[in-house]
Each structure stands twice: as C-alpha cells, then as structure tokens.
Length: 316
Image (cartoon, rainbow, N blue to C red; front, side, top):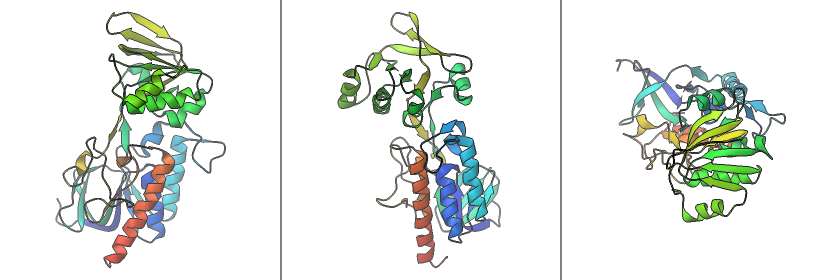
C-alpha cells in the first residue's frame, strides 16, 4: 500500500441500482461520495434488454439506458464516479482501507458495498449469444416472464428458486418445460409438489440442455436424456436459467459475516454489517427478491445509515 492514501468520507463499491441510489442519497447529504463502478459497470441490468417493472418508466426502458440515467443523476449531485475494481479491503481499523486495481489505496470513514450478485449460467455458446443479444434467454422469471405471456417456455434448474420461478411462469405462459439434470428435485417437498401438481408444467428429469436453438431469438431447445442418450428438441420462445446466483463478495469474506452462499449478513432493520462503518445494499445481501427496485431501496437505506453513523462519530 502507498504511504499516503486518498481519503474520503464515503466510498461506494459497485454500481447498479443499489450503488447509484446510495450515491444519490449520499451526495445530497453532502457526504461527497466516491463510487467505483467495478468489473461490470451498471451490474446485471447491463444484460437486461427491456425493463418494464421499474416505477417511473411507463413505456419501459432498456437496462443499460436506465443505468446510464442513474449514473447521470448521481453525477448531477457531484458523486465522483470512477472506473475501477476494488481488489482488496482492510477493515481491521478506522478509517477503512480499500485497494483499487491492486495499486490505488483509498481510506474511507464509511464504506457502502453494492457489488451485487451474478447469475450462474450453463455456459453454452448459444445461451450466451442469445442472452447478450436480448434474444430470449433470461435468469429472472419475475423480470422477464411477462414478455412470454401465452407462450411456451423452458426453465433449467432443480432447486427451490427454479420451482418458484416455474410456478410464477405457469401463471403467464401456456406451458413451462422444467429441465432437471438429475432424476429428482433438490427443492423442498412443498415446492416440488407445487410444480408436479401444476398442469401447465412438464418436468423433464434426467435431461441436459445441449443447445438453445434460434439465430435472432429463442426458437427451441435441444436436450439430451442422460440415461438413454436420446436427443430431443422442444419448441419454446423463452429460455430461463435458474441454477443459482453467486454474490460478488469474495474479497469481503475475511472481514464480514456471510451466509453459506456468500451473501453478506446485515443487522435487522439496518444495512449495517458486523464491521463498524461498513454497510451493504442490493443483491450482495439479497438472495430473495433480487429486483432493481428493491436494490435501489436498500441503496437508499445504506446511505441514510452511513450518514447517521458519520454524524454520530462527529465526522459529518
């Protein structure tokens, strides 16, 4: 670490709805926040085409366009938005130390973590291509299910989240084909029952996705039965992946309490973590809702909590 670190009252790690909202509130409270955008500026919404469930956009908006507007609003109140990726932290003493891109040392009286979580994908070339082009591949049924109203879709996964998303999709879609690699669900009995008893859901056990079919949009899925080695194709217009998310929190695990998956634990009715002066917002701590609007709400909470903390400490 360099001998003389750049010091700030409030440092926000990560962008997206949580980070930018925290920045807006922190800047308006004259905390002069610095925000580092991270490896994926704008977060998961940068790979989301149409956002129609965020209040204030009656005609909908493209995910990247919405994140640019969030960024501009944060900068309007003089948030210092910077490119860079936080590579390590030291929360052993106050002020907290943060290293950016393995070379820039910062200190901060308050740190807000908004690093989000990344969806797990199968890794198929066709899946990634259609995901990135907005061609009908999604990791969020609640976000995108509406676009497939009255259509046939497929969903991959065998856990509680997959069963929950399949049930949600069944309320909108004509048919939901659930693709499960093993011969059983990992989900709880009650979630399994909801899926298996739903006439609009067909469960394909012992099946693996070989390819998502279609050039400009999803037209079907080619599957392999891993018991019989038989290949089949089903016609669908949407392909949902529900095999979990990984919170982007690895660099904090030495210091912060996390759950078994890696989501940061915060105090009840607060964004405060187990380390004084460190707050968390958005999907880095939320394994349940994972929506832009809830992330933005917790970004607001983190900024308010940080402002109160700094005031109580006589630092603001």
